[in-house]
Length: 129
Image (cartoon, rainbow, N blue to C red):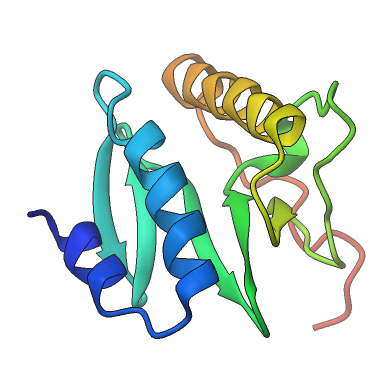
């Protein structure tokens, strides 16, 4: 049992437990992807952080992609929610079409992380300090 499996086993909310377990079982099987608990939630690494799964009140999760603004969002389901770098996809139930879309986004995020060096050039641009 890895750290994420232990995290899932200790979740109190049954729907969040089901959703996180579902996506964890998919993400951890990709080559060169390592699941780890960071900031008390599951993160998925290749060389660096690719995405994380965040429990959302009252009964769901959000799959958040670290470099979300660099992804194509061809599927049209990534949400920024006033964030400068991360985009995510909320889930309250397993919907096959959205699961397929998230798997496409996950593969794109892995490819991006593998081939394009991260540059924090536009983060916070235009904000007063």
